[in-house]
Image (cartoon, rainbow, N blue to C red; front, side, top):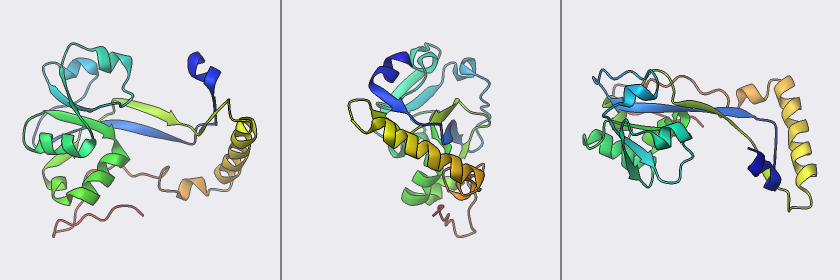
Length: 173
C-alpha cells in the first residue's frame, strides 16, 4: 500500500503464500467465496493479516486463537467448523505437532487468498536500498538458473495430507 511504501522498501516478490481452509474429513463444505462461509464458525489466528472482506464479514463467526495448532485442536474437537492458514504452514504444523490429525482433517478445495511475499527493509535503515537491490539481483539469478524452483518455499505440493500406514508423515526438509 502507499502508506507502507512510505516506511518500507519492498523486494520483488519471491513466492506466494496460499491461504486455505481446513475441515474435518467427511464434511461436504466447499469454498466458493466468502458467501459459502455463511453460518460457519471459523477459527482465526490473532494478529494474522486477513483481507478486509474476510475480517469484516458478518456472514460467519470468527473464533480467535493464538496460533494454528490451537485452531486445529478446536476443529478436531468440533468447536469450530473450519480454520485457515498458509497451506505449507498447515502441513508443517500438523507434521511436527500431531501427525494423526492428517487422518481426521483435510484441506478444502480452493483458496481464501494467494498473497505475494516480499523481503522488506525500513527506509530509516541507511542501507535499505542497497540490501533490497542486492536481494533482487540475487533473486533474478536464482530464478534464471532454476535454483529457486528447488527451494522448499516455492515448490510446495498440493497437500492432501498423505500418510504412511503407521500414520507418520515426514515434513519437508
